[in-house]
Image (cartoon, rainbow, N blue to C red; front, top):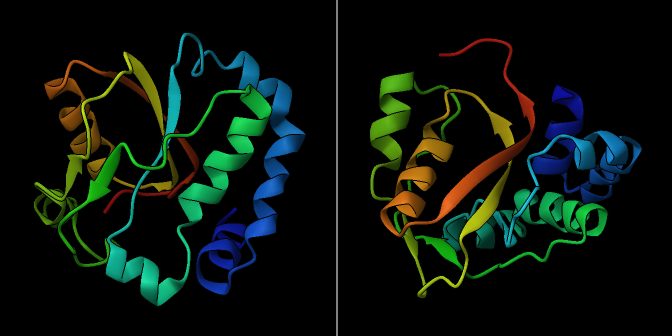
Length: 152
């Protein structure tokens, strides 16, 4: 998985995300997507997207949308604070790094969403986004393609 994520994220081999189709039945039966209004890809800061050229979480969300038939809302949240890359930071540094980094861009018509990301390490990203959604009375589940073998 680490190699696949690396190829997607840093080499632009986004078609590798299609491996998720092999797990279609498991994804649908997981329960994560029950009664969900939309999918939301973890946003990147606009300068980071400009540098990389894409957001890998968007590619993952598109495939999940095809599998689950749940739409993706690409504009519900945005990353307003350009943060250090999480790789190499301690759990404490990751948490403070992302504090206040995301915001809703509009009043949400949704009651429950699934937030989509590539890798789960300490949970700092999803915790920050979950707090944001809870403050707006939106329930959230999370789907990550992979997790790191150890926490920093």
